[in-house]
Image (cartoon, rainbow, N blue to C red; front, side, top):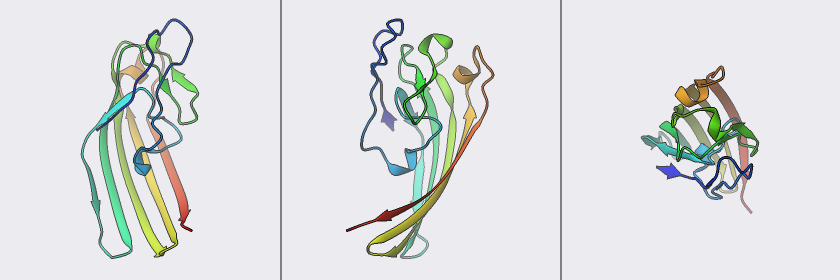
Length: 140
């Protein structure tokens, strides 16, 4: 479970939100940020070989409070707090893979799908979201 909130007054036009610096890497994505969300659900990692790890997540995404807006990964406001009453933002499924090339190089990829929930559909056309990422980590 991950939880972040911070906006105390949705009418003052001040973001006042929390963005955690050290979240699990698989939760990092570009389309929907973690600010003001509570994520709850199962996750599993399996290691079929010494160098390959597969990650799976299924999360329920909810606004932490009714004063919380939803932000994109960049920090830009996606939906204001007053644009809906529901706390249910959506359900997210993530599948990822990490491969250790050497003690100094790691490559990976993940696919992230969010089924739009009631909050995203209130007052606007809420659509499902997809995000795919490829990355390389270098250790010195």
